Every structure is written in structure tokens, then in C-alpha cells.
Length: 297
Image 1: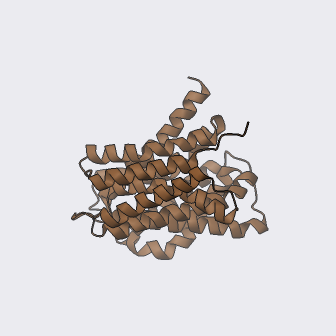
Image 2: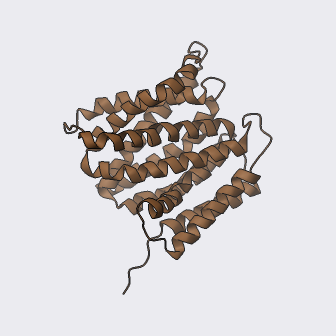
Image 3: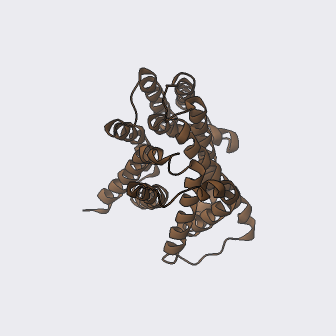
């Protein structure tokens, strides 16, 4: 098997883990683990794993001038982003989360225009509009009467907060990625994430009753910490060493499909016309916003 094939499998593996995560994490909340308690497990576990693997990377020191940007990236990518997603997952449904999470590329395009003054083309403008309409449709009209989804509109809104903060994080972390090894960045950002999240997540973490947690619950926690937080990053890093960023980014289109199929297959969610319409609008918006303009002849 050649390296390109392995890279494609790695990108597919990361997308598959993300798609499954929506349903698995939802199944554990809030009966056994509340959302903020989950984040405590996630950032602490990831920090330990990235510190362990960092010994295989180069020995680097973060320059003093970069700590401010590193702190902001940790606040956005390892705190607000994760807290809003898991709280939204508790309040909403797996299908809604798998659809709305894909607006991140649209938000990146919009924020790049504002923060980096990148030009918005006709396609990108139309993509942003369609993605926005799809997201608003799901937020306003996607409510259902479900015992495990107590406040779907607020949950959906939190998914947008998650996508916005993660999109901002991707833009701000770009300069750091160009300067430092990924292992160096991740170990320090997750360490800062532990410190930032500690006072917010500790109360719900202490409420976890480990003695009553079923065996599958331990498996879900391991999946979220090792799979969703650790392996997905490593898979994407490897994929980027062999594939173009645009090729790896194209796998975002598979996430809602995989997320919806797994949610339906496991019986944890159901499709409605509103969800189908919103999914089509969001994916079409992502496609247009991410499409590269043809070079001038």
C-alpha cells in the first residue's frame, strides 16, 4: 500500500471518527457524564497523550512573543469550542450537530475576509449565504419533542458558536503551525486548555459516579479522548504530509453523511424534511465557499 493510499485512509479515518462521535458522546450525556465533565476528561487525557508523544518530536521552546497567541488559540480551540459543542450536543441531536459542524469552512472564509482581508468572490459569497440560510433553518425550524434533546434551538446555536470559535482558531493558529512542530503546539495548547477549563469543568467532573458507569461508558470516554481528540489530529497531520490541504478538506463533506448514517443505524436520531433541506443548503454552501476560483488564462 503506497503512502498516498494510506494518507487517504487516514483522512477518511479522521472523518469517520468525527461522524461517529456525535452519536456516541450524546449517548453518555447527561445521565452518566455531563458535558463539562466530559471536557475535563478530554483535555486532560489529550494533554497527557500529546506530552507522551512529544518526546518523539523535536525539542522546541515557545518564544515569549508567541505565548499570547498560543493562549488565545487554547481559549478558542481547547475551551470555548469544546464546551459549546458538548453542551450543544446535550441539548440538541446528533444529526443537527453533524450538519452544523460543517459550517466551519464557511465561517473560516468569512472571518478570513474580515481578519485577513481576503477577497470574497461571487461563489464564496453565495456559499456563505446558503450556509447561513441552512444553519438558520435548522436552528429555527429543526425543533422536535425529544426527551434527550431538551432545548434544540439553543443547542443548535451553540454548534454555531463552536464552529465560529474553531474557525477563528484555525486562522490564528496558522502562524504558529508554520513556526513550531505540531507536537510542541498541541502539548502546550492542551496544557493551557486544562488550566482554562479546570474551574469550569471540575464541578461536573466530580459528579461522575465511576462505580455506576457501565462498561460501554468507559469505552465511549476512551473513544472521545483517544479517538476524537488525539487520533483525528494525528491522522489529519499524516494526511497533510501526502495530500493537498484542499483534498483533506474535501473530507468535511463526508462528516454529516457518516454522522447521519450512524445516528440512524444506531436508532439515536431520525431524519425530517427540515434536516434534509438544511443539510443540502449547508453542504452546497460549504462547496461554493471552499471552491477555488479558476486561474485566469
